[in-house]
Length: 232
Image (tube, rainbow, N blue to C red; front, side):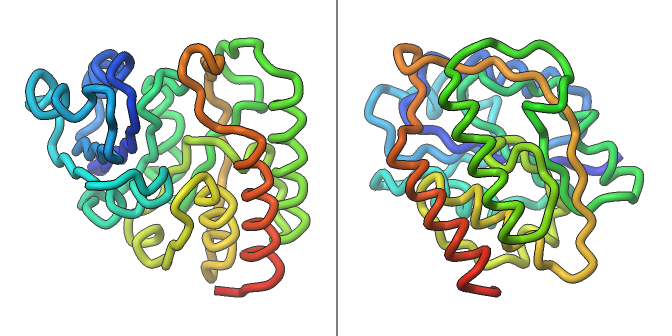
């Protein structure tokens, strides 16, 4: 079986990091766990350096808060496994889905896999209608620009053969990472992209959800920038 590099960006996630890491460690795959602390201010750093230290293979600290995209770039650069999986530090996405997510790559059929929250696999927490609409509209616009038929461009669960994701030059520091990496991966010559249905346990804003309508505006800009205006 291939080795997985599980890249976990985190910012102020002290309440969810321990159960998340326990869930990741419980998965049967050979793996390295890479955590990027994006200048957390809530005790996350101390937790990572003490109680959770032995559960992490590589710990990277950012001195200033640079955003999810910047944290992912640091983690992807440090990855040495055969397959790279992006994992949020909250508990919205279930590591038990790893086996299904990596299967198309392990079987030699795919180079990248997107985990879709809209493909009807596993339990899904019912939350915000307008978030659902926003996600579907952003995915539609992205598909129109890069000629794909994805159902969930904004998903956290994106999985890549390591040499493919490390070959990309990524720029976005915040949530613009999602449309940027989607557009750039779609243009890799001969790329094979699959989707797999996943479980989803969304959070409310009171529970720590961070993305806002401003990130949606930035996503539209990035879809147009990388989907229409730029070809590299």
